[in-house]
Length: 172
Image 1 (cartoon, rainbow, N blue to C red):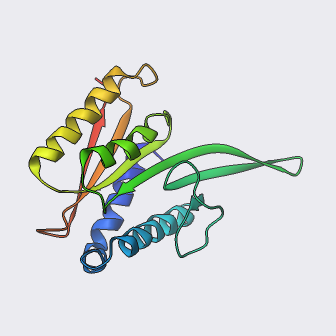
Image 2: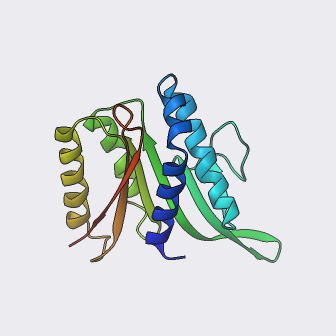
């Protein structure tokens, strides 16, 4: 599957669950994040991926460096070897500052070939503009990224609509 396709599928799945997630998120960010991981983890399993994450549902493995990972395994002489990591995802819902965003986002910069998604709360336009500028600057400065390589930002509008918004950012 094309990497842009993975981000769109996740966005659509979250958008279809926005009422459910928003109702939970109004009262409990931890449970919101738990349900977010289950929704995305289940989608990964439906698509034939192994899933690594920490949440109330048990998947193949616990969380690695990222909040959630989709990966494929290859069996070689009874050894399971990771053959691809197609999604790395970070989410930061409860802490709504640039500093907390940056800590999680910067981890995505080491995953050069995977689909990279950051989920964050839509706090205010000033912070969102700063975040988008930081994403684009990070991609353009990084020597590890090639032209067209993308990071996807999914914003959850918890205050107004409860909807999710997807933007994709590329190295120029």
